[in-house]
Image: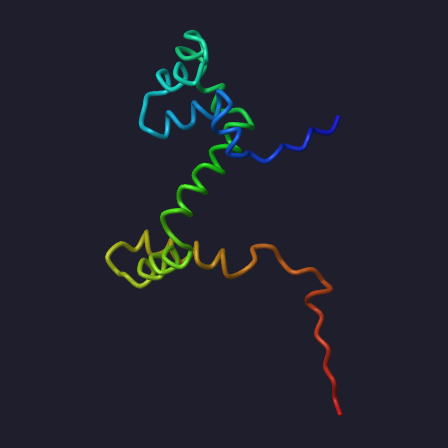
Length: 126
């Protein structure tokens, strides 16, 4: 049986679902138990099952949307790129430098090989 397509998380889900309220409380630095109680989950769930909350599709979708919105409101892609370039050019931490190079290359070059059709070259001789 095919799985249902996961709907995209919205700000509405973040403010009006228990899972969304849990994520917001947790992002403010509150412990998982306290976040679960604030969100409206039972005491039993808060004590023993916070991992189940965090393993739901809704939680992952909300988390992705929430942090993407937070990050994009505080830093631009240009600033991120500039910091990546600084990290690549530094020589103090080679591990960080190598990881920055890998990140940059993964954004610049496709990881997948091109299909046969894309690899064709036409040579015209006159």
